[in-house]
Length: 123
Image 1 (cartoon, rainbow, N blue to C red):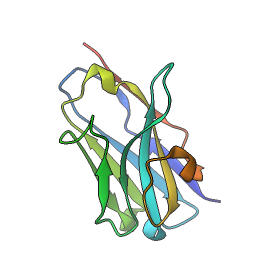
Image 2: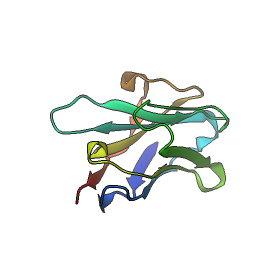
Image 3: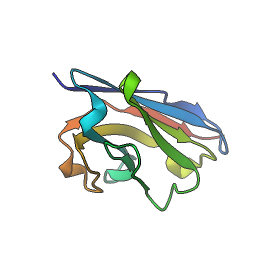
């Protein structure tokens, strides 16, 4: 059974950093693109970043470019999202999701999801 588990969320002050992890079980990540999405209260789920199966191609939402970095370690079956210079508007539940091969900005294109991890940025 394909399963994704996020971790690494928490409360951090503005300007701080967090690293989120997305650990896969029941399948190997080699053939899958992994996307990070977030959803704040009262807002729609939005794409944050994605890395395709080859680990070379990545994309980022304009709001996080230059601050967030996505990476993957297929040997550990894990994808990471390094988040630096965090802002209060980054506060949301962050989800990782998997789909075969290529990335998509549309959350409906991803068939497997983790349970989410809360990120709160506040002084």
